[in-house]
Structure formats: structure tokens, C-alpha cells
Length: 212
Image 1 (cartoon, rainbow, N blue to C red):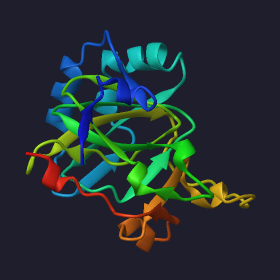
Image 2 (image 1 turned 90 degrees about the vertical axis):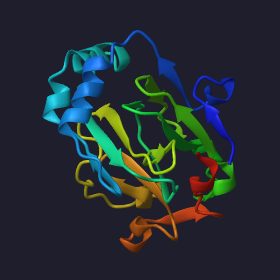
Image 3 (image 1 turned 120 degrees about the vertical axis):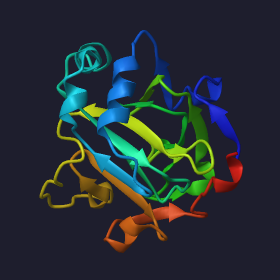
Image 4 (image 1 turned 180 degrees about the vertical axis):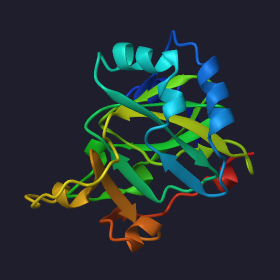
């Protein structure tokens, strides 16, 4: 699979690099207080990250004053498995280079998405990247074989919390997996086994052979 850069024009429909942020303390804190599991782990809110000055800058500058949470997604991964989206942008920043597998919400046709529409973009270590609300994404992938990742995940507060109890009114409602989180699962994923809507057709992409 071709791995492009978030600095390429091709990334423009999916997100953008946010300039002007000093991420040094953020990266050091991610390294110090968060684990690096063999699989992947996600924590939506990490107090040590939310106490940093950059937390206030992201809330005020990047989110225009909205209440946000700073958490992380760490581990080792090379597979797609699922795609998710939120009603708001997500902001990522990693201690090492990492890769995002993404597609667009308008690639969904009749509630399903062909994984051939998925593209891969490398995010350089320390750079702050906004992933648009209309961009489907999921867990980061390693950018180097055998190397893990520690990635900041900033989102509006409450996102990925407990799923609200709703009466489904349409097909999208059945994809609601958590608070502000709509999920499309591949049939091979653990999430599908847990009851997530299987809505990804085609290959469950694995970039293990595309990273050095």
C-alpha cells in the first residue's frame, strides 16, 4: 500500500497539520506516564496530559473554546480492522512517526464502505494533526516494523464514553458504538465479534509489508 505524507496535498480532504504548538512537554509526558502495550490500548482522558499548558491551547485555539479531553492510543498495530468517525475533529500527535489509515464519510455507500477507498498517511513525530469530522479513521499504525507508537488523542469531552440509550431511527443510528463514535467494522475484527455493525467490504488492510 502506498504510504503518503500528511504534508502532501493528497491529505487535504482528510485533515491538516496545525502549526505553532510546542509539543516538547506533551511528548515527554506521553513517554513518561503512558504504557506501550503489545496490542493497542486507548484511554480517553489522562489527567497528566490535561494539566499541560498545551491542553488549554488546544481547547482555546484548535477547538475554539470547547471543552475537550486529552487521552492517548498506544501500542503496536498494522491493521485496519474498523473505521470510526465523530461529529467533531480529532487531534493527534505522536512521540514517534505513525501512520493513519483513513477514508471519507462520503465514501460510504448505502451504509457500507469498500476498503479499497482507504489511504495511508504518515504523521511525523511531534507534529499536531487535525483529522476532520468527515474523515473515517481508527487506531494508529506503526510506521516502522516492530516499533510501537504513543499518540495523543484530543476530542470534545465525553467522546468515546458510554453509548447513549437511543431508539434507532435509521441505519447510521445502528452504527453508534459509544458517545460521539460511529463505527464500521470489518468482519475479521474483534469489534465485529462484540456486535459492531459489519460495514467494511474487501480486504482488512494490513500494512506490515509496507513499512520498513
